[in-house]
Image (cartoon, rainbow, N blue to C red; front, side, top):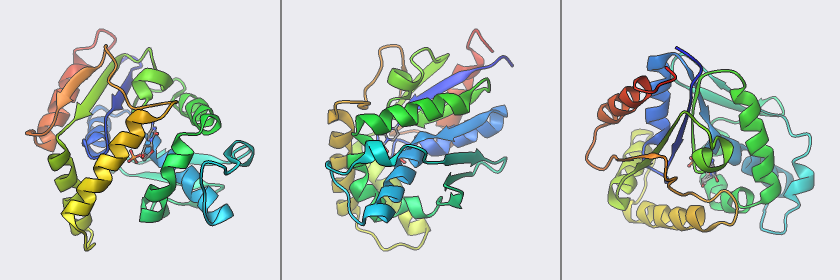
Length: 225
Ligand code: DC
């Protein structure tokens, strides 16, 4: 297989991460979780300042920050900030609540875009996020836009939380998803958008395996493979 770059974008809960991990494992390529980087940077600034907002000096603080990510053959990823494994810490409610300040900051977005391009390097990769097809890899071999109804996405998140023993409220999760959608689509830089050249896949009535098969098929039908 020749080098291939696959960009998977879509809103929260559209299944990007689970599907991309599975596709990467099946094809023996690397998966990169760009959302984890925004989460890791948010975690770092929350540790540093206690609380953050649009006035936080992200641009200065980010210089020299050492962020790494590793993808393992069992489909898991680990994200490190200055050598510390933050993979679990970045999944907290506190991080989600404050992430909008970080992900809307231009200096942060430029830093992350450079990092993601460096990581991809010469490898075949599948990367998921919000601006992968539009900003990070506008020339990706294949762009996918995954979506699903708000109800489906909220239910998926709810099931994930319940599976990890968390006591959550479906209505509250739905509200949070609607809020994240508007933050993701409204920001000035790196907004979530459906590129014209992206293949649109509505996963509302599809199982995870069906989506994985669809993506694998699309990748295998690429000229460059
Ligand atoms: O995919 P996720 O839910 O882990 O992403 C966490 C946050 O990071 C999400 O609120 C949007 C932001 N993000 C972004 O702005 N750009 C990306 N390429 C990926 C994520």
